[in-house]
Length: 337
Image (cartoon, rainbow, N blue to C red; front, side, top):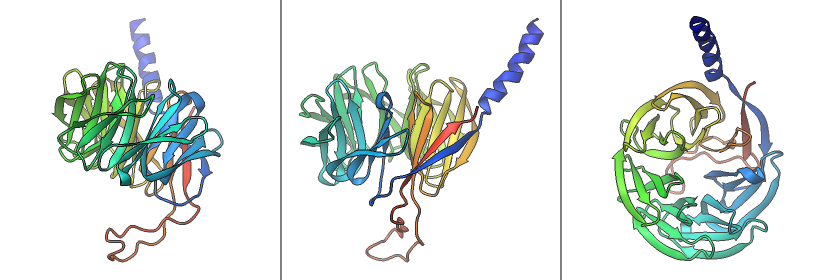
């Protein structure tokens, strides 16, 4: 009987891990401007997308534009606080955090943060919003009811994406030092830090709360899994190059990493300390930002089409190819059945 059970387990487990993902729909949004974070709002099945001078609000189901939060200068991230009915968006060019109404999308206030305000999250246990300010090497803390500034926390390096664990601790990648920093959200102090090596330049972050594991996606083409309690990396796996987005779906045990090389790397969790790559979905060049709705298990990757790469010039020293007008789109990626 035990042998039969073992045979059944061997037959079932690989098929679950090997389930293939595919692009099922493409929503063309159009509009001008670069973009950054894709932040899902699962209860309402909508996406908040930072779009240079505004925050786009998009219906997940049909790709229709619901509304926009205007008056942002250098849009990056968004944080949603349902209990207050407020959303928060970073405005990096003027070093501020914009508070807006989650129903009307009207701007309610603007709080000075710090230089290069980028990612932003809400931590429920402390009831505070944290923005991570790249060039300022700090986190700005604001109250979600009023948008009032509480303090700025020095982080000792350039922060990128962060997550709330739900126990009063917040974690954020420090990209220039290849570290993870732990913040006590109530005391508003850094309490621990550890290296993500051999994962260099950690940018994106996701979390598996059930197993106390952090996922850091690195620009070096590697993702690292950290044991939060131990404060150390316990596993790594290869991902595409130029990563900027990550998510973890606890229902499937799969982590996702969206990369500028046009791949969505999917890594399966065999157990808390063992992982393997199951698939690289071909998305589109530049598809480095994504969001996951854990209720529908859909992954949303934002992309656009590009023109020829120009010669280097004073106006375009990094030789970035131009975005073709009207080509900005959302790719919906879903698991096969």
